[in-house]
Amino acid sequence: YLKYKHKEEASLMPGPCLSYDCIEGIIGGVDYSQNKVNQWTASIVEHTLTQLVKQGKPFKYIVNCAVMQKSGAGLHTANSCYWDTTTDGSCTVRWENRTMYCVVSVFAVAIAL
Image (tube, rainbow, N blue to C red; front, side, top):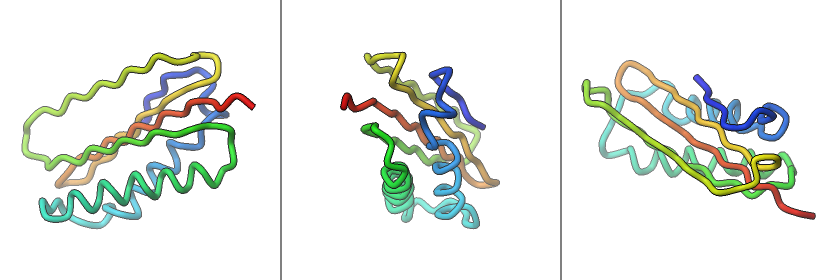
C-alpha cells in the first residue's frame, strides 16, 4: 500500500513503484532471516536510490527502510520534515509477505536550478 504526503507526488516522484519493485526483487521470494536483514535493508535503499537518480529529476532523495519479522508485535513509524510543500514530497510503501513486513519511506527535496 502507498501513503502520499504531497498532492502531486504521482508526477513528482516515481519512488513508490520503484521502491515496491526493489523490495519484491530483493526479498519477494524469501522468508525472514535475522542474519540477512542488514544486507536486505541496505540493498533495498541503494537500489531504490539508484533507480530514483536514474530518472534525472531535480531532486535530492532520502530513502529509509525497515524490515520486521511477523511476530504479532506492533510496528509504529513516523517521519517529519521541514520543507517547501509546493515542491518537495514524500511517500511510504508498505510491503509484506507471510514472514515479514517492509516499510520504505522516500523523501524528495527539490533542487533549485
